[in-house]
Image (tube, rainbow, N blue to C red; front, side):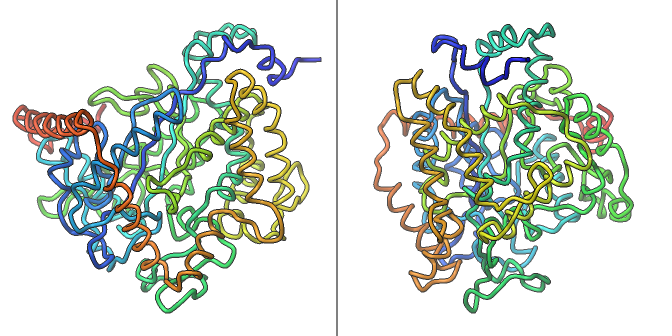
Length: 518
């Protein structure tokens, strides 16, 4: 009988375990003093959104994205993210950094300014890509914010793991294979993350103005999903009808990059009808199902750091998977930085178990069941009579969640034993506590309870919370060294953007044609 992967891992010594490598990308809108989406440019004091290593923008000029470096522990990663928040808050003047995933008040597409990145060809490419998202899907869905969690394991672990599993491939190919092993199990279990961390059960009425939906009234300007955990990840959030035809395969690297590449080179009639220009202005990069790889919306992605001018698919094919990106996390509105310690530690435990559990290839029928489980928890995960399809049977969502959490206990005890701490047992216990009793205290339920207790709708409740977080962060003085470091990053990023713009001599149309050929 074959030895299980968990058994192999339990044979490791503490010295064999190199721990996790981790980082976060955290988005959030800037809102003005009325709780409306900000129309001011990206603050110059925050540097160049094109080249700053920690502070950039996502879709909108108003949608900040804060990025941490890679860390080997949760404490340092959260401290870094908090430092960046503190610096940002210094320079928002009378604006606030919106605390929730679902946006502040908006007024249709035209109220959401597309991000600007200057006149360099790379900067123009980023802007045109966002113009393409606008003409394809509208800007409203692009105003939603979330947190992305990036996780990898060090080569020291992979070398030991390859040895004990008896694999003889190159280390590059072995790591890619194992990351896809993890991803397959992530897809089987990602519904649990939406139950435990979904925190967007309500939204401001302006988000769905003129849109048909099945939400319920919370008050005269707030809608809620009756049992929803995450409106952000539901039908009103990130979705794409054209992408439904893609059938992106997450079983292995080769098929993943091949199916993505096909989407980038397959025309879509509706996008062809739009064209790539409006007069002299470029309005999308191409007329394919996807303009670029990043347009594909998924809860998880295999990633590889790209070199300048290199496409993500090219980087993955050349050097293999470097880390995985978990993309389905709502902002925690109760945290000044949008995430919390127990959440990160639990994600580490959850993702490691995905690697250590048997993970057969996912066929079409299973893929459909997994998608249904995920969508059901997003739409009605707080309904305790909800059942999921597990092993060919319907299982109550609470029972399925408790079973998954219980299976993580031995791994939590092992990691804590190696680290001489209660880190993972504590994180696991915190998740179990959310599912106790008749009224689960999952974040989506807490949001609705807090709104009800305050007597405020979504916009006003989040606005007050955002101002409270701002006050907290502004009261935490940065050291002179920290301040100087951020100011230097601002100067350097602005200088780097200026140098890029000065050195670009190729017309953008030619640059884009060359980009599409590569």
